[in-house]
Each structure stands twice: as structure tokens, then as C-alpha cells.
Figure (cartoon, rainbow, N blue to C red):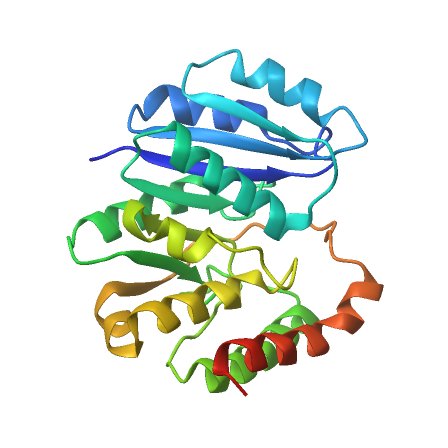
Length: 244
């Protein structure tokens, strides 16, 4: 398999980062590389990351001086990785590994099995009882998904699952511009691909993969104040990319 560079946005993760899992994975998977983005953390996250990356030449740290939010951290990591590494594939994954590294590996294998796939993303589709979410989060997620599907005009089940994979040639298309929303930026990725290539291209080159494992870690990073902003951000995204 060609190399995959994985971006891990980190904000105040010093007590939650599963350093042993990252270390064990990278040592047994020579085709992977990790770039951890310290998103202006106010705790000891940078110290933990620096100690972690010292254990492998295929783990790296990018430290942002100010908090940019998840969207900004992922984008900064992707653009840095695109410039610095010759990886064929680029992915991002949440630092708490709610989606385990084994799921990322499965996503990469499914994507690379077909040479036509440019964008592969995981979805929290209930499958054999493996994905178990709190009811409130499930209802909110399905409501957002329904509105998003109408905006995209594509049969996508879940845009918000935090594990996505890109071929090198589309990273600039997806990440080249700053995002409107720090939390709904995933939706913007879909819109940008449609804007650049069209829906027919998306149906042919994108692949949605149901999750088989999801570990609820708790401690959501999104504040109640920002939750109130999401409907307005969703409307702004729709108007921006639909041209209305």
C-alpha cells in the first residue's frame, strides 16, 4: 500500500491522548505517518506530543500558537502535510480514538482496493449493534444529516463522522480555502467536491463506509453556545455553495 498521512487535531488532550495506542500502531504499520496538530492548547498537550513523536520518525507535531478550532487545525495539518510529505493518501481522525485506528486501517484498505476512489468517509450507520450512540446525539445527528442531504442533493447517510480519507490530488480542492464553520466544515468538504467536479463524479469516486466500531469517550468539545450557532452556520454554508 502507498503511504497514508493521518492528521490528528489536538486541543487540551494531555489527559486523554492514548499515546500507547498510537505508538503501537505506527511501529507495526510502516505505511502510515501521523501529524499531530497542537491547536493552541493551554494544558500540557504539546509536551505529551513531543514525547510521543520522539519515539518514531513517522510521527510529527505541528503546533499552532492560537486555537483555530477543529476545522482550522485539520486544514493547517493537511496543508502542512501536503507540502512536507510525499504521501499518496491523507486522512484525519479525532485524537480520542472514538473511531479506533483499526477502523481507519479498514477504511484505507477498502479505498485502495478500488483505484477510482478519491474520497472515502466513514458513517455512523448502525451495523450489527456495533455502533451504539446516546439517543439525543443520534436524533441530532439524523436531523442534521437529513437537512444536509437535501442541501447536497446526494444520498449521503452521514457527513459528520470524524474519519475521512483523501487521495493526494484532491486535498488542495477540499482544504485550500478557510472553512466557514469550525464544526460543520465536513459538510463544506462535500460541497467543494461537488462544486469542483460535479455530482456524477462524486457518485463514482466517493465511497461511504459504515463504521463497525465506535467508542463513546464523552467530553464533547463543542460548547452549548456554539450548538445554538449551528443552524445559522448550516444555512450560511448552503447559501454559499448553492449560490443562493
